[in-house]
Image (tube, rainbow over all chains, first blue to last red; front, top):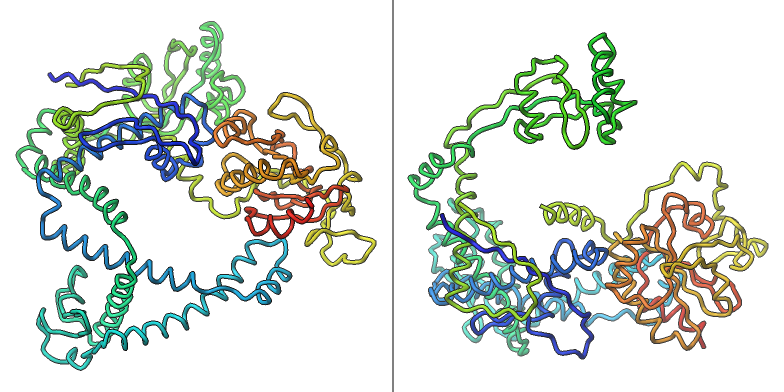
Length: 423
Length: 198
């Protein structure tokens, strides 16, 4: 049995002002997590809108949770680097194509941003759509899009001249090898057949039309990226961010393979945790809850005499959810109710009325309308679930071991420590 | 786990983008006369694009309302008579409202001493509104409007579709000079509100 300590962090942050220096919340080896990293993580999370409406303590514990994730991601990044994952050929290729795509996008954005709506046109639009900002925005974008289309064509034509680009479209009809050159230009600009087909998942030779379209797409990509590069557009920070995001993911993929690709490991796990394959019985439950045993016994008598449990539940059940649904509790999985209830209804026949069952909530009378039998899933059917379970079990100790290896220093107050044991 | 529930809720909220529509209280408006868009004569005052059901563009001739503020006191709009009032209807779950509030806070601190008074009218639970006020540092009064009972109020102010964010601009004389649906932009502020302050 291994003992793990989960630390619940709570981070109260003073709102950052533009000129304030961000506070370092944790250091991981030589990497830092600052308060602005954390705020950025909050703002880009799927619960960003919700976060603003939360109470202070909820916000603090959510920040604590995110901070732990940021620390874990830095640990994984350090380990990925130390394992040389950033030096692999496939990663280098990946980075290169990310860089080209990024430069292309920035250049396109720059082109679009260079378009300005003339004063008189803008004034006309504003008059026409006053008070309707959506319509105004749409009118503006339509005008800009139109101008942009023309500008883009002109730019590509002029770049073709600048870089002395030659496209060999006729070669698409012939015998194509990965190194068949389809485009050349100044400064080593080149597109080969492999550039068109790599990473697209092609098995047979694609049609000439597809290849031609793809060639012109690639040509535009390469040309605009090249132009961006010659304009000294700096993408080093964005590349570094991409690397920082990708490396932890690569390491996780690697670990996942290591931990869960051996069939025997999966089977052994199933043997040790047979419950993972069990499908619980599902029961369609009807219920009425009353305040006192006396009332409950009286109601039970009425039901046995022919009154509807559901009608009575709709009137008298003290459980608001049940009352609002006339006692129909829906389909409930075996093992999810209070133990006394589970015990009492396990042997209940369909449509039979239970004895009065006492829980801290009140006095329950239950009936089961219908059952869907449970069962056991086959190994093949739950392989993925086993993989996930093994991964979840191994990840926390793995991250903890990295924490020891690279030294994590927390600069936040740990409000509560909740030790938990895990088998 | 709490965080999972939260995430699910957040994803639903994230699905709402652009203008968020409030869809409560549709039945309560059955007895309302529809605002006539064609009424464009001088006898029916109009704002930029909206004819208010009260057929006036004088804020002080409209049916006054009293609402509790987050400060715990009851307020009515005429407390701010003489200022350029930016009455901003919003809700805590509405992301565009949150973006807009950051700008409104900036406008208020920049132009407050020139007579600008932003008033937030939050259509939501006071607790959530107060959390937003604290988190985003709202520096202007926020009134609490229960969405279940204030459908009529919205209609009176021209918002029968119950859109948030929704902003009504009232000049120093009380004239409703501009109504904006959706997120207020810097450009709209400069075009329609800034000139009223000089």
